[in-house]
Length: 138
Image (cartoon, rainbow, N blue to C red; front, side, top):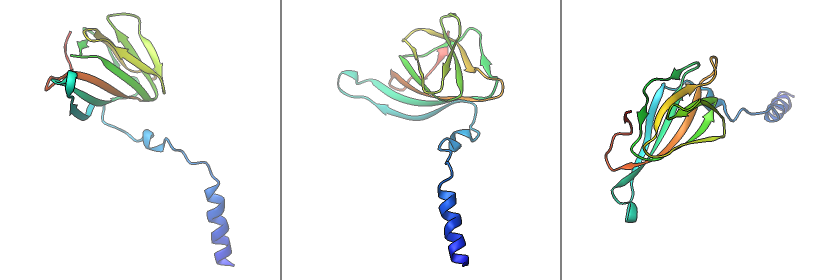
């Protein structure tokens, strides 16, 4: 009888919904973390692809003179709502599953989490000159 109850309990548990985003809810360090950097070849020799994770704590909001990146930036929001603004234009709120783009040479003037009670995270793909820093003052 005990084996039957154990089996039924496991079977019932297997029908419960699983939160596939549970890992995304774990705390992460704030700021940017470089995940990988790979040299390119052929016509793009001298450049690298860099993948960065951005972690913005709840209510974080970066404004000010901003910074530049040495190449184009393509971001994909993986959690929360990310604030985004370039060249002192009005801020945008980028939802989970949406992207943002910074052309080479633009000034990134707004960033952070759009919600006071939730973090925002994004994965950012950059193409930069080999060995260059990822940001410089505006």
